[in-house]
Image (tube, rainbow, N blue to C red; front, side, top):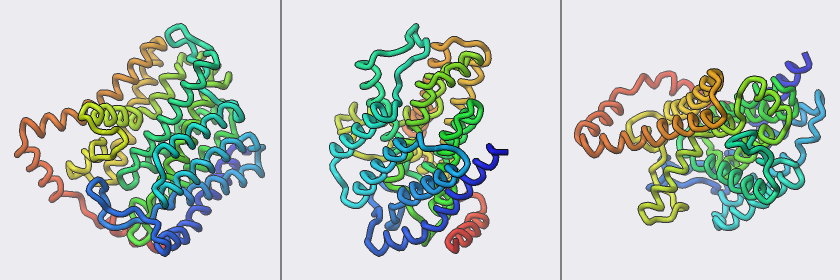
Length: 387
């Protein structure tokens, strides 16, 4: 009963918190011209407010305060502080467009806070290639590179309406189930609070016109910290290792599988930019979500599709683990599936465009002219804009 009460009070409070503050942030952003303007790389046609990260942070904190009436969640203080730093830095970037170097330094400082004050790190490979506990001089740089990579990978998938929210909701749900199994109720509260905060934001982001708001860098960097914390907690806490060993579930392949699509999509994009002789930091339209939208797939369908592809990687990992595969085999399976579903799909479509340009153009035209009825979508827009 306590568990159900924790989930309900956390979810409902975070949901209501975002629902209440969202319209005020939209109005404030429009008044102060804190908007994301259209350009050749972006997909929107009009300026859109970019303070969604503040709404999500408000909702998560409100949910955790409510959870604290049921459980002791004081251990999350350092995590909330790290989230706040990233939210602040991201919001500054949304408003002032700060230097990438400053952003990187802020991210590294945040990771060091999580390592040395929060006690979180990627300090154990749990038998992968025969390696277990790692020395500090190895796990500190490994943690910095990995967490900074996760934060920026999440930032880069925020390019289609609903994609960031749906992906984060699905990943938080996976980790919530793990935290429930282990009895880690503080982290469960964080996962549930994130889900509760993201759902009302998703509704406005995917369906709103006047109420539409982007999560912005403040939100993507913040949720990058949340998901990175989940990864580090699973890797460094003994109770998760005990659960994994009992069921032949390798932890390193698992955490990689949960974030496989943004991680491998970012790797592909960065490698391709470097191969073309351009800076990996200069944005373009070569992400998988750009490809799907160019094919005539709607934003919300793209968001659902990419999140499903990520879940397929997780399900495949679980299946081979259930068959008794070794830790290394589980890792190679995750890498292979992620490459197949991201790199494989992207370069297959690129190849088809090269071999059959006219037919592919006809396919795009047909898809755009034969979209499903928009009655439900238009109905949702009317409802959401009145919220």
